[in-house]
Length: 104
Length: 201
Figure 1 (tube, one colour):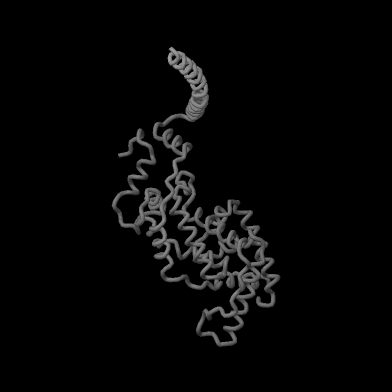
Figure 2 (tube, each protein chain N blue to C red):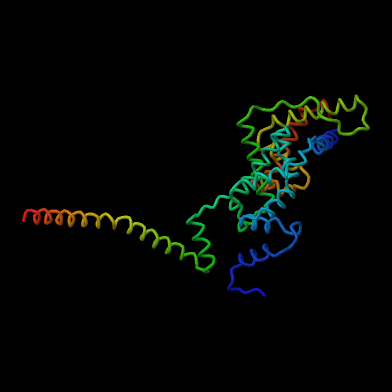
């Protein structure tokens, strides 16, 4: 009895009703895709991975490259601040001199 | 000739872009072309798989328009960002895309009110008498109601395993569980259904 129930249930589950899809569903999806642009994102990590695959670099290379990139990023992000301070002091000195010359 | 110095991905891409008729191409090859923005490759992929994913979505949502919307959304997401599928992860496209469709169906169900099951399901076998057909319709209606009331994971296991062409191993991969866990979910779902459908068995 239980085995019969099992079989009947399995048969009911296999013959579940599915309403047919619209015949143009696939065409509709393709048409919509033609009007939709693909996302052309540039991801640093993906680009790095690709580069390492292409260059056959070992895994420690990842760490080294990332350390170098981080170091460069940090270096570049702090450098302009020092430069701008120097620029400011030289600019103020020049303006002082220019004022002085004006008086003469 | 295979040259060890050339990365394997180079060969995969070269094979993918060879001028072979679209139906002869594997899903993976088509996807590499889709990643390069090929509309014909995307169309071939859609033509090949729309029906099966629609069937799965319909089993969840029991509504044609909703199921079509979900399948359309899934394919458009794939088109917009084909890089989401990664060939190097050893996942079959069909398995990965089943997961995408299942997730969209579950999201859809969470966002919208549960759909009313239609009373007037069409006859399946025209040789049946009117009484038999009515009984069968009623059986199907109750079955769909009971399946909809099952816990989410049991419902997913049932929907995947009783779909043509999806093996238990594939269903387990879709759900990211092992085969034993899937079998346990199926067993629990069937026990519940047998109990609730005992008047119709």
